[in-house]
Image (cartoon, rainbow, N blue to C red; front, side, top):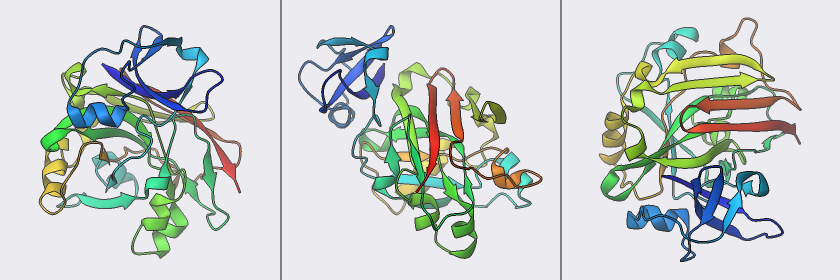
Length: 263
């Protein structure tokens, strides 16, 4: 099952629904995607049906409870920046306002001069800290702020720094998450391509590690890390500029694509 939140034609009210065969079907009871996750409800949607081309897809959960990122969690990414893979997961929060829809846009604050992309597999938490599903995300990062500030609150959590979607694919649809492949393009140039099996700390270990100190709740999102190919790892270093378009794809989860806009 694929769960999405969208705007119907001529409407400004967000609607929860299920993606089916090129269409999105509203939940007939008016429930949101977060309602369905919290209730563990996988019953089919039965409401109004719209073509995907007719609607605007929003972030699948309009108000995420919490967003957690994991730093240096691909061996290839650690190698490209000359770092040792960490012994324990490096966990950081991203602000709630960083969440935005799969089409963005991503806004670069004027204080940021070195904006970077990070294609990632996102895990959505269900009841009892289980994995409810998966999505595609971009852990947008301000490399200059990240280098000079020991915490990453601004560098990783600025407004619009977490475009994701295009929907949530439930865990029962993905037999082996480690077989998924993360790909990212900038202006049509393939920059990242790596299997999730390259993770330093597996998904189950990350969830357990966070749960040792923090109660995970339904709807929490964990960004599991990014592989090699980010702008800061290139020679010369290449950062995002106004008008650039980032596309991230993880089949069969779908893809997101968003422009970069300077303020």
